[in-house]
Amino acid sequence: MELDPNSVRRRLAAALGVALVLVLVGCSEGDPEPEMAPTQSVASTPSGEPSESETPPEEAPEDVVREFIRGYNEALASGDTSRMREKTAEGCRQCEEHMRPIEEVHEAGGRFDTHGWQVVRTKLAGKTTGRARVQVAVRISGGRTVPAAGEDPVVYEADRRLMLFKLARENAGPWLITFIGYYS
Image (cartoon, rainbow, N blue to C red; front, side):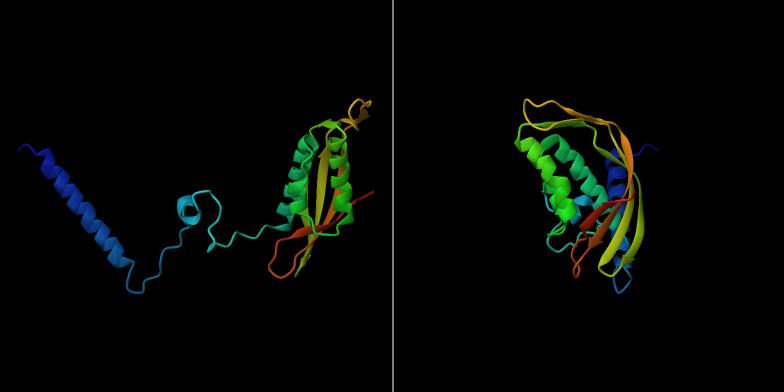
């Protein structure tokens, strides 16, 4: 007996419809909903930004430090320290001491010829409500800095450093860097 292709399609569609109804009925009437993360298209606006009703996940102190260092490397190439500033608390003197020279060199027409810093390891050294300390091992690429247009470059060798970042947060706000120091 030969099967009619249209008959097969109708039966398949009917079976899928019944299965869908059973799934929907099975998930209603007080049954707990399955725990699944929404897809990108459900959780975000068309621009990819979180919707107003969605709370972005909390950024861990170690991630804030990594983002600051990514921003540092970007700033060396571009002079734009905005990504670094997003991760620093107002009044962080040591943060400013890392950003200001980059801005000054670029404003003077200078440049940095380096690959910047590479995070080798991070360790959360302590965390309490509203305070955190992160120890970071960084590898600093060698390179050269031209302090201003037309000036001779300053050459420096590669180095490794152990750093301490202190962070703070108020209420449920984001973690922000309040201190940057180097171990001797």
